[in-house]
Image (tube, rainbow, N blue to C red; front, side):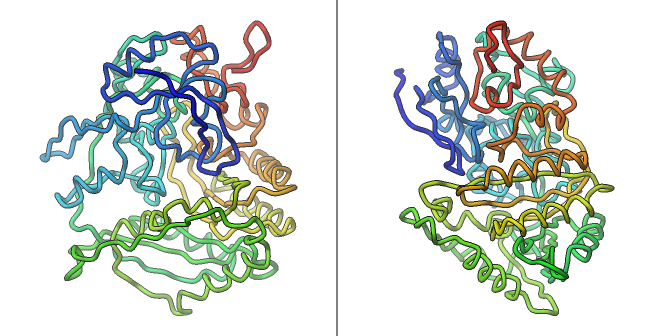
Length: 454
């Protein structure tokens, strides 16, 4: 197997990396490739759905896992699945939803891999009910930077397990994951949509939904000001007891963005028009609909290459979480900063999270999480720095899977278990063979004796 030079990007396309890449077909080949010598480190790369630089290793090597996508075993009695790390959520739904099973939780795209879900400890619209993906992992087969293969779990090398869950790929290459799928009565959900007139109303609606609904998520109008600040649409959902007649025959309609749109297409005027129309698409009295679970969980998957709407310069996604007690003040300050900068996003999500994850660097905590997209243009990195500072002032943190601009000091303050994480990495990878652009930017490994970040 040979290494091929190529250019990779994160999903936001603001960061690019020239790498030497290989695509092993089988797990033993991946192990052999990992045992080479790499001057600037090596990193596993799934499908590149992290937005920033977490999946990149500029000037170094990447081991692409997309062909390591086999289902190994499945127990229909309790839903236990063993699969390779390159299996996607789309693969899981295609194979198991017709059999009455689905992943316990899922990120906002079905094109993320299981390895990526572990490395970022992804969460979904049901976090208050089921936690994040790492909470459902029973064990992992991991290739360490040394080439040694180990099995890790909450009871087998638990420190290494905790470092791998949410560890942004820095503990090695995941070969297999064992976790339980969730049994469901249908492939549909009953969705209730309601307008929320302002931030206070929205937060009250989410506080109620986290106690009563299986799924809850909100779209928020980042351009609204004054009394309407924080208005949006709250969606709550439950798995339907049965699929509507003819539902299985309905093929999802796919669209694509064939070219990069011009940078001027997304501006405060166009975003404001979209937000007003989107808010009014739900009747004032609300509505209830039965939708395919794919449509509810992954609305943007119906538009291939949707990241091209932001043009060649790409876009940043900002996602944070702030604890419950700080959320009212923090969210208002965040929305005011966005509104003052006239940098509103039409892809803006507000939801609640239920608690801490298992990993040293797991993102979730009990609180409110806000996610917004910003086209890359002058001044937006300064805005992101202000949003991160507000988050930090209120005891919150920024999601590493979305981040591209956080600084090392802010990162260290947001993730109090960083010291434990570094201890594990120092023990399994003293030569710093596993590296990424994110690990260097945030100095996750600290400084080595030469003063270089890693």
